[in-house]
Amino acid sequence: MRRTIRKTFLLEGETVTMKYVKQLCGIERYNRIIEDAKKKFFADPTVELCYPTPAGYLTIWFQVA
Image (tube, rainbow, N blue to C red):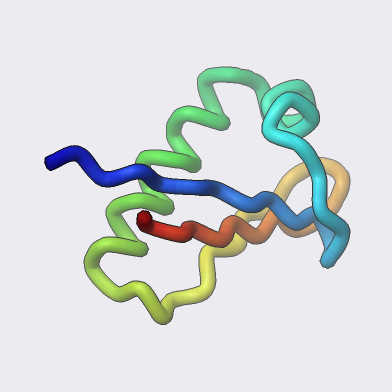
């Protein structure tokens, strides 16, 4: 069975869209951030996932359904 992962992006505490994050970071960096965040999340779901961007810190929340 395949898991569905819902992502929520917060930039300095404000919710932003995936499209905005991709524009802000670039597609390649976005993909690296997501892969890194998934590895960290599945190793320890309580870890805070924060990444620096030109506009401030990006926090990612995962919800597995």
